[in-house]
Length: 86
Image (cartoon, rainbow, N blue to C red; front, side):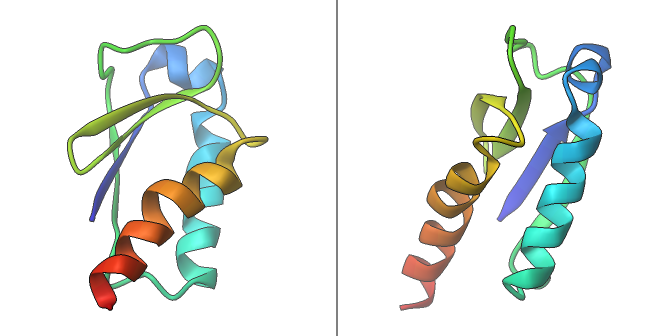
């Protein structure tokens, strides 16, 4: 699974550095190092007033914040990976 976190100026100001840290921790805690390729990207063209833009295997999600990160990670990362493993 390819995950790109926008680190462009708008998302940087909205906390992309914290989102990167949360992803790194969640990937490690769930032992997904071999399943998730984490990368930074510049502007995805989907700037939002709140949160960071993240692209997962080509699907773009906006408004990711530390507060909604856990739900996002479970729904868009863990569930698809676990379904693929079954």
